[in-house]
Length: 430
Image (cartoon, rainbow, N blue to C red; front, top):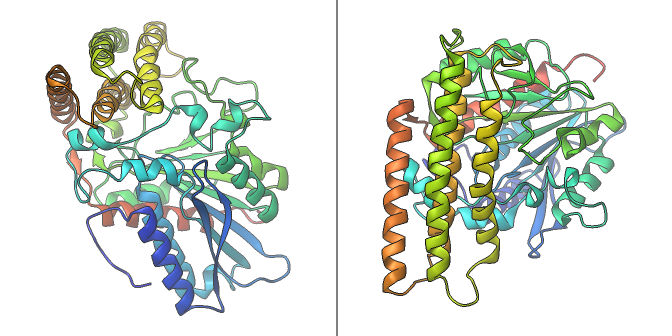
């Protein structure tokens, strides 16, 4: 596998082909095997780099946990290449590296529609496919009954139990924002190095997030999972971090690190200065969220009227309904967020504004996918209205947050180097 720079995310098939070629060139060091299958029967491939020897320290890298976050597969291949070329990262450290090339291939294939290279924000939301939390393999164990787990979740749990990794690295990618890391246990020194890596690539470090608002920070852009019993997230989010696959390595003394890099960088998410009037800002955001949710609800009703008698794609319809219903619940929580349990900075407010606008865009983009199969003349009118709304909301988001596209090679470079930094900074004995 050669070091290439292309301004596009590789597809599921391309990643497996590249991994297969990699193994052929390094048969004594690398292996590729199938460790499970998806709900639709697609294989889950595991690439291993490192020698099978006693007392090995296993590192598990999971790509594609969210189907609309496509950078992880390319990052996994880049890390595999770095490890293979540097004996200090395997023989010297006593480690073997295992790369689950795509945890959700079914959903990721849905997100591969549309432009193959650089997309506009509107293009991204028109084509990105993101299932509800109970169909996301990392989160599903915390939501679904024990006797109704996703096969992808089961495969990942089996893999963790087999490997007992000292470190599990989950490769995510936010659409808009900056670089940041979530940890189930602290890694001293990682924040400083993340800042250096990000600054060298002109990427803001995200010091305020919607996902980790209640998490303690061990340094800029690094968030530590709250202790058991402490609040971890907004009540409107159904998932429970403490019962997700992130915690499984703790059974064996390991830990999990989640790595986020953006597609579009937004400088506001790194502004640590206190917000001058957080109460007013939160009230405005709640108004914005309710307004866009109301428009999305109307669009959903219009789309229902023009769908075929069978009702269209039931999975897409469920996603759209969930997003429309979530908006008002989130707005209520933001109304109650003052006085806030954390000191709200400008970065926090920027992150919440992005989350509010993204919710409506995800709903509208899902509705467009529902209409993609061709409709009657009234359906074409509805499609045009939804298209207009996606374009307008995407333009408003881009203008409000001064978005800058981060080329795919830069995303991959930043994420892969952050993973290697986390491994190098693991405390002794881990």
